Image (cartoon, rainbow, N blue to C red; front, top):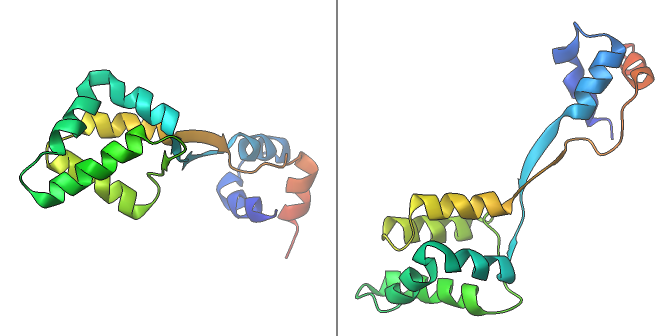
Length: 136
């Protein structure tokens, strides 16, 4: 749990207490899978489900396959969509490129998947900073 020491050079002008507060305030965003219940609720808005359903009849087999997979993802209980996975992000990009979903639809999915958490789960005190600053 000493990764936070890497933050210290950027905080050199701060006191130990200020540096500890700055480190403790750091956050990161993380993408988490979206549950089937959330996906179904998301698909009900803005005509998304109907657009995906219509695309299951598309003449292009690649688009039709993507739409069929997306529809299954929306209607099957116990599934999830993990936009952090490269192939799932590519699927979303392809559905947008095909006009099945919009950029706004994709962005709203990413909002559902994004959580903000503390960068360092253990609280750093001024005494930790003071000690780390004298390490060789």
